[in-house]
Structures are given as C-alpha cells and as structure tokens.
Length: 337
Ligand code: HEM
Ligand SMILES: *[C@@H]1O[C@H](CO)[C@@H](O)[C@H](O)[C@H]1NC(C)=O
Ligand SMILES: *[C@@H]1O[C@H](CO)[C@@H](O)[C@H](O)[C@H]1NC(C)=O
Ligand SMILES: *[C@@H]1O[C@H](CO)[C@@H](O)[C@H](O)[C@H]1NC(C)=O
Ligand SMILES: *[C@@H]1O[C@H](CO)[C@@H](O)[C@H](O)[C@H]1NC(C)=O
Ligand SMILES: *[C@@H]1O[C@H](CO)[C@@H](O)[C@H](O)[C@H]1NC(C)=O
Image (cartoon, rainbow, N blue to C red):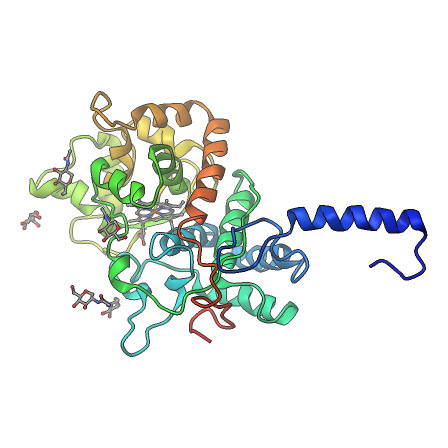
C-alpha cells in the first residue's frame, strides 16, 4: 500500500504501478472475459492452495491427476465450463454425474470438495468451482510431467445441471466424423481434438469400454481388425469376455501416470486403446483425416505440449459464464447457494 507520507518519486512509482495493474486487472461483469489475474487481489494464494490439496491427494491416489483433468473436460463440454457437472441430483434436476458418460466413471469429486473447503477457509465466497476444475487440470498436467500454462479465470458456477446435454459427450465408440462434429460444435478444431485426446496419456479405462473392440466390433462378432494383435492378446487377458466390466487398464501402458506424447506413438503402432483414439489415425488418405496431426505429435513432444496447452485454454473458454445474474460462486460445489 502507498503510505500518506510517500515521497513524490514513490508516489509517481505507485501511480505507474496502479496504471499497470489497471491494464492487466480483469473487468468483472456480465460481458467479462476470463483472465489470468482474476483472483490476484481477492485470493492471491488460490493456485497454491489447490496445488497443496492435489499434492496431498496423489499420495493415496496415483490416478487423481488424470481423474481431475477429465472432470474439467466433462464440465466444459456440457453447458460450458460452469461446474454444472459437480451438482448433485435434486428433485427435478438430475445430476450430470449420473448420466451414462459419467456414472461410475467420473471421479475425484472428494478432492474438488477438499480444494473448495481450503479455499473457503482462506477466502470465503471468492473462487468458483468451475475455476477450481480449470486450475486443478493445469496443476495435474504439470505435476505429471506435462506442460504448464497460464490458467484463465473468472468463471461463475451455474445454478443448473444439464443431464440431457451430458448424453452428447464424446463416446469411446464414436468415429472420427462424429468426434469432429462434437468438437466443432464447441468451436474446437481438429488440432484441438487431436491434442486434447492426448489427455489419454495417463489414467485408467474400464474393460467395458473396450470389450466391443476385443470381441464384437461393430456387431461383427470379431475383434477390431485395426487393433495391434499382440496388444489385443494382452487386453483379452486383462478383459476376458465375461469378466469384470469395471476392471481397470492403463490408457497408456508404456508410461501410465506420466504426461508425455506416448499416446501418439501408441496410436502409430495401432495401440490406441479406445476406438475413438485409433480413429484419429484412421483412413489417413481420407478427406478430413487427422492422421498428419497424430504424426506430428508422435514425432515431437514439444509440438504436442504447445498445442495441448493452447487447446486446454480453448476448451476452458467454452461458453464462459461470467454474468452475475445467471451464475454465482458456490460455497459448496455440490449444490447451488
Ligand atoms: C475425444 C473424445 C474422448 C472420448 C471418447 C473419451 C472417452 C474416455 C473414456 C471412455 C474413458 C474411460 C472412463 C472409465 O473407464 O471410467 C476416459 C478416460 C479419461 N479421459 Fe477421455 N475421452 C475423450 C477425450 C478426453 C479429453 C479431451 C480429455 C482431457 C483433456 C480426456 C481425459 C481423460 C482422462 C485423463 C481419463 C482417465 C480418467 C481416470 O483415470 O480417472 N479424455 N475417456
Ligand atoms: C448409476 O450407477 C449406479 C450404480 O452402478 C446405478 O445404481 C444407477 O442406477 C445409475 N444411475 C443411472 C441414472 O443410470
Ligand atoms: C431430457 O430428455 C428426456 C428424454 O428425451 C425428456 O423427456 C426430458 O424432457 C428432457 N429434459 C429436459 C430438461 O430437457
Ligand atoms: C460415423 O458414425 C455415424 C453414426 O454412427 C455414421 O452415420 C457414419 O456413417 C459414420 N461415418 C463413417 C465415415 O464411418
Ligand atoms: C451440438 O450442440 C447442440 C446444442 O448446443 C446439440 O443439440 C447437438 O446435438 C450438438 N451436436 C452434436 C453432434 O453433438
Ligand atoms: C454383437 O453386437 C451386436 C450389435 O451390437 C449384437 O446384436 C450382438 O448380440 C452382439 N453379440 C454378442 C455375442 O454379444
């Protein structure tokens, strides 16, 4: 703070500083844009507070970083990044958590609650649940060996969930055309699709999402012919035909908990685990193919990291809810205030 007895030069310096702050300080209001310094004056330690909660959580849950970035994805794709995913069911408004793409699959909600509790005790009513998901996604990638980026902030939390909307989330059986439609519907292009799919460089997948590829691809009663034979043999042992549909497998068996570009090198040798993964390299000569982008990221981890960081910002910008008449900062991420 500037004291009342400041020397003229100190006062001049303070004016320069104030002008600098004004030009970088976010505008708060109905048409506000997201910005990096949104909480700099209201909750300056927000990032570090979330980081500490995550560092603690990973001690007992090696998978938590992967689970948290997926929450941000499933939040942003439904009604925009507004923490609609985090609302529990209430009469008349079923939770997105219970829809097919999330039920028994989306996880990490307790850690989000812990981050929210820590933030509420440091700066009550300030940091939105939607921003917690965006911050947690960045920290999760960075602490797993991936790129860092300046997280844009200033989202408000929704007062509604959109169960039906969450049924439109990308599905593991989707082909390239459908994936491209679902992404372009949200102003995300082919580079975003391929880069963001690289989120499958860590985390786990249940057998039920791959058994069709192993045993009955497209209703043929045969395996997916594009799946590498030895990887298929490995997966059929992990996921026998009448085995536990919830048994877990690594999305990236080469480096299961590290954020790197092995997702793409796996696809190059037909070891994409989901149909939606391998589709990114399918029909490399077809119009609209994304194969060259897969090739680029397989060849250059730097290119992947740079694109991933930009695409995470793009995904975080889906329909930002900044209008205080429609959104709020929830005090409990699971229910509206
Ligand atoms: C392109 C369309 C996508 C499809 C079809 C898809 C589908 C899936 C499926 C089926 C699972 C396994 C869930 C389970 O077994 O419970 C999964 C896990 C995961 N997905 Fe995606 N996903 C897509 C895009 C993304 C994106 C854009 C990201 C993040 C940027 C992402 C990050 C993850 C992560 C990290 C996991 C592991 C979660 C954990 O271990 O808890 N996915 N995805
Ligand atoms: C979600 O999964 C649980 C347990 O598997 C199940 O009991 C419940 O019916 C499912 N919810 C919906 C909406 O399908
Ligand atoms: C959701 O979809 C179901 C089935 O199509 C429909 O009955 C219901 O009215 C929809 N809910 C909303 C809120 O649109
Ligand atoms: C992709 O899937 C959709 C819906 O299942 C289908 O209509 C379309 O023909 C498929 N496209 C290709 C190229 O297979
Ligand atoms: C695109 O978004 C609209 C709503 O915003 C939805 O009704 C439509 O089903 C979406 N299309 C796809 C392919 O998901
Ligand atoms: C294979 O898939 C088809 C179409 O989804 C289905 O009708 C058929 O019952 C499945 N076969 C087996 C053995 O599950």
